[in-house]
Amino acid sequence: MKELTPKTIVEELDKYIVGQKEAKKAVAIALRNRYRRSLLPDEFKDEVKPKNILMIGPTGVGKTEIARRLSKLVDMPFVKVEATKFTEVGYVGRDVDSMVRDLVEESIRMVREKKIDEVYEKSKELAIDKIVEIMMPFPSRKRSSNPIEMLFNPVEEDDSLEEEREHIRDKRKELKEKLLKGELDQEIIEIQVEDNYSSTVELFSGLGIEEYNINMGDIFGDLLPKKTKKKKVTVKEAKKIISNQEAQKLIDMDEVVEIGIKQAEENGMIFIDEIDKIAGKDYGGGPDVSREGVQRDILPIIEGTTVMTKYGPVKTDHILFIAAGAFHVSKVGDLIPEIQGRFPIRVELENLTEEDFKAILTKPKNAIIKQYKYLIGTEGIDLEFTDDAIDAIARVAYLSNEQTENIGARRLQTVMEKLLEDILFEAPNLDVKEIVIDGSYVNKKLMAYIREKDISKYIL
Ligand SMILES: Nc1ncnc2c1ncn2[C@@H]1O[C@H](COP(=O)(O)OP(=O)(O)OP(=O)(O)O)[C@@H](O)[C@H]1O
Ligand SMILES: [Mg+2]
Image (cartoon, rainbow, N blue to C red; front, side, top):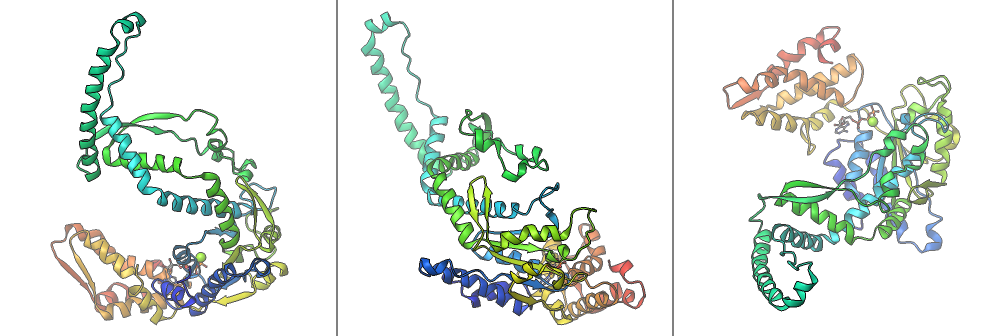
């Protein structure tokens, strides 16, 4: 965390998101403040409350994308939830507490993963030993069950057995070498795998049991004998499966849970998307479930409360909340005042310009143009775009946003798909090594539609 200064956070986000400086800056500062707080003496720590952020901006300009990228960037428990998924307590659907339960779940998963990494070498070695045992077992004692025979002839038998064992021990050493080098990775062996109990919860969700997120496997998992089954796998897979099993035994789950909860409480982040959809009084979904009700349910979580999870109570006082919404129909002022008050930092995301579109097409690590180049590349065709083609695509996208509905950068996807429709269809049958898309191709394929009145029919 130390090396993640606000500046580097913004730089990282810049790799994927064009523009939106203000929003990037705000989340970067909020993140750094978490770290700063962690350095404070305990008596201050409690006083420093997170400054929650509200991102406001039209659809398709990067609100969710910022959250998504942020979560990959930071080594902190992070969950993204949609406000529209929640219903008031007492109604069928997800209750708001579940966002905290999800966060803890995620946090524990992260801690567990880290612990497993720590014991990785050890568990790998244990796994190899187990595989040796499977591939070359010691002969079971041939001891006769007849006690009289044993009385007469004990020494001789033990001797031969000992000899044989010595021999196998040598062979095992050889085998282990080979396994370590990966020479036998393709061999097939039979191993025992655990049949885990899971998904029992799904059956009950909606009936309220989900509230406690009960996993039958967790409750009975240690009481019931673990169900195992035999499975044929390659040695390579066996190494992975068995070292996972061994790692699981090596880590202290109680400690993982304890750290996990603490991490969630101190460093957790919850991104509430589509918050505008629960603003305002009327509710599209049903007659009784009110948006305001959901807001009232969310409020205590944001203000700081204790949520019961299957791992224990979790305090939400220091969890950072970032909410986002287009606020097309409803206004920020339609949120209940208490909620508004809990989001002291407001950032507005800007509408994207034609220039931004050009950058979005080409600059991000996962830029759309790059994606199509890779896709067509799989057919053995090199797809190239001239600069004026990029200009034209951006222009068409921008114009169709103006003339029809403004769907932000999402428009680029629909435009590109339309533009490359024929090529995507024909590519496997084409006998060319390279296709160059230039401005006139784009114009021919798309510009005609722009002038027509109902362009959405073609480009959407
Ligand atoms: N500023 C941007 N830079 C790069 N890509 C962007 C940008 N804005 C949007 N995109 C692209 O458009 C897609 C939609 O954006 P995103 O999901 O962030 O929209 P949003 O702002 O959350 O809109 P909504 O209010 O509809 O949820 C993203 O997957 C991303 O590929
Ligand atoms: Mg979104």
